[in-house]
Figure 1 (spheres, rainbow, N blue to C red):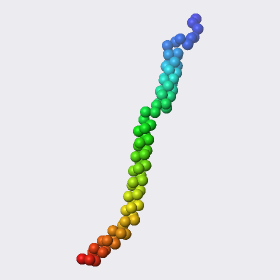
Figure 2: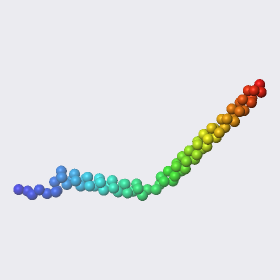
Figure 3: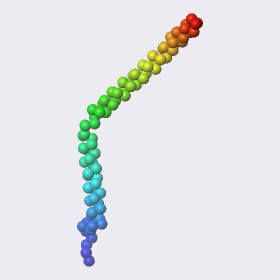
Figure 4: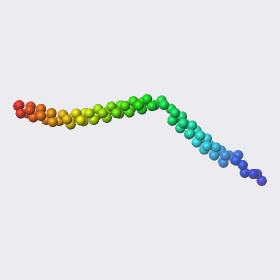
Length: 81
C-alpha cells in the first residue's frame, strides 16, 4: 500500500499555488508602497484644492460684505430718477 505524500497534484499544487499568489501579492504591495511617482501629482492636487477653497471662501465673504453697499447704490440710483 502506498504511503500518502504531499506530491499529490490536488494537494501540494493547490497549497503552493495559494502561497505563491500570497507571496506575489505581498511583493506587489511592497512595490506599490515604495513607488513615489504619483506623489508630486497628489501634492499639486492638494495645493490646487486648497487654493480653490480659499478663493471660494473669500468670494463668498466678499459677496456678503458687498450686498449692503450695492443695495445703497441701487437705492441712490432709484431715488435720483
